[in-house]
Structures are given as structure tokens and as C-alpha cells.
Length: 144
Length: 213
Image (cartoon, rainbow over all chains, first blue to last red):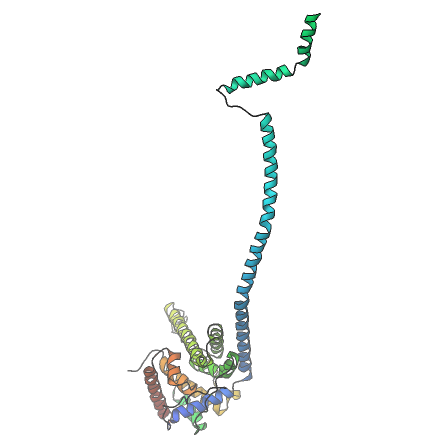
């Protein structure tokens, strides 16, 4: 299915000996190209075609490889993210619980209000609660 | 108006006589060249065109190795940038790339010669001006004694004596056999310009042939 070119010499004068002779000489010279240069030309052509093939393959595979790498990255992030939340949230929750329990025992009140009197009262009651022996011994002594 | 840029001196009479004899030794073909089929793959196209391209570059550059580099560069650019184009477009694209590469090398050579002259390196110790650098002239030797090779050398010298655009028009249109439209595309000019350049080139070569006779 090879399409043929138009006659390239359609508007050249038929009787032009210069052109005809030059073409004949040129054709002969091309046919008689020495083997060294013919070999080098063939090598250059093969090198060129191979370089073109490699470039075409790179053009095809580079976007596919890039897309695959992006997909892998997204999937990896999506897979790791829930696990990371669990790991980060549970110690935080545990710590918060412990802190709340400690706060219940050792909460620091604000200074400069009536709460200080309450705190002093609480200290007094704590101290009083810590004196069972004295509390129980005083009535006994008075009876005797 | 003839272009005078890039014209090189015509060889002296003795060489011209040899060239005339060599040219006359090759008979002119009487049958028109058969049309070339369109290559199926870019590699087949390059294989079909590589020798002619190298010969054209060699004629223009007068250096086989530089010609080989130019052809390889043109091949690489065609494969990289235009291999996806329809096969019918490859010939003008390839020849256009090669033409630009050859022109670049010729200009680089001209600049190199000017720099050598300007820096004074083009003179010897006695102040005499050295000839500008040119590619080595391999010349006819026993291994190149065949008439066809001498004819080719003579024809190359005659073509090199033409201005650059006339050289390109003659080589693409007559030697390579591109049609006017493809030649215009490869040369980056109009079809009318191609015809003008070609007509002047043919006139100049006809004159040269008369001188040789």
C-alpha cells in the first residue's frame, strides 16, 4: 500500500543535460559509497532508532509509573491514618483521665476570694479527721 | 540579482579540465527516475535516504566526518520530534532539518575562520597570512581513480561554487528529486523562490560546463 510520489522532475526541462548528468553522477556516488562510511551510517541509524524507541517507551511508561506511585502513596496514607489516630488518641485519653483524678484531689483554688476560707476550713477538718485518738481520749479523760 | 554570500572560489583550470573529462565520462540517463515509494517505518525511511543525505552533506561541507555528524543529528531530530507524523511528511522534514544543520556548520566554520584572522593566528611568524581552515581535500588517489568518483568530486566542486541557497535548491530538487512543494518546505521559502534559486543554479552550472568544455 505504498503511495507513490508525483514525478518530482515534472517542471524540469527534458533536454537539460546538466541536471540529468548530475543526477546520474550523484546516484552512482551514492551506490558506490565506501563500506566504512556505509557501516557508520548504518550504525548511526540504528543508534538513532534505538534512542527513539527508548524515548517512546519512556514517554509511555513514565506517566503510568507516576500514576501507580501516586496511587500507592494515597493508599498508604489512607491505611496508616486510622491506626495513627487510635495510637495517638488512647494515650491522650488515658492521661486526661489520670489528670482529672489527680485534679479532684489536688485542685488548686483561686486566690483572693472566699474560697480561701473554705480551703482553710477544709484543711482544718482534714486535720481534725486525722486526730481520732485525741478526739476519743478527751471524753474518756474527763470521765475519769 | 545573484547571491554572492557563501560562494567559494572555483578551482583552477587544470582541475576543471579533469572535471570536464570526468563529467563527460558518465553518460546522461535518458529515462526519468522512478518514483520512490513511501517508507512504512521511520527506520526504513532513514535506511533509504541515509546515503543520499550523507552525499549531499558531504558536497556542502566538503568533510565526510562532519557530513556524517550532520546526517546523524538530522536522523535523531526526525525520530525524536517527527516520527509520529505521516510518512509522506518525512522527506521534507528530514531534508529541512539536514539543511539547517549544514547551514549551522557552515556558519560556524565561517565564524571560526574570522576569529582566526581577527586574533592574528591566521598569520605565521613572518607575518604572512595563512590560508583559512578548510576541510582536508582528500583528492583523487589510486583508490579513488574511478571516473565516477572523479566526476562526483568535480560535480561537488561545481555545486560548492554556487551560493548557499542555490546549492540547496539544486541538491534537493535535482539530486534528491523532491518536488517543488517539498523543496520549498525543506528550504523554508516559497515555491517561487525555489524555482528562482534552481534556475540560477542551473544557469551557473551550465556556464561552468561551458567553461570546462
